[in-house]
Image (tube, rainbow, N blue to C red):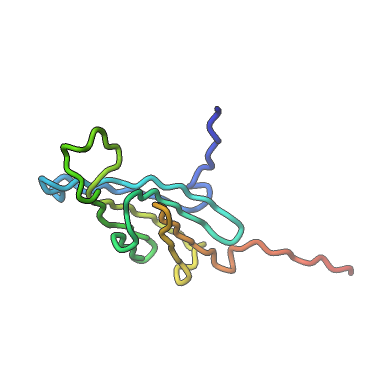
Length: 139
């Protein structure tokens, strides 16, 4: 099956920067990872969807710093013993992701929802950047 061609994010004026923790910030027992994200642009908003299997909304911290959204948190797999695990692909540890926004986003109206292992961040566009119809009048 051919892969869908992805739009270039920079073209859509949403600059995404991924930051992993510096080696000196990682303890000997904790791992840092970056959650996968998809970004969609619509007429009135931009949607960011981040995969977060096993993460509850209480384990996610999202902050807006100037023009940047920072998503951090922690995920653990529960009480299973390492002896019982045959194979595991889901990471356990801390996650950290930055999204740098430009002026098109109305930062006062940003919202988010965690459902079924996906964090959905809604970034509404400012009115000045939304498409609108301009009436052509007869002269």
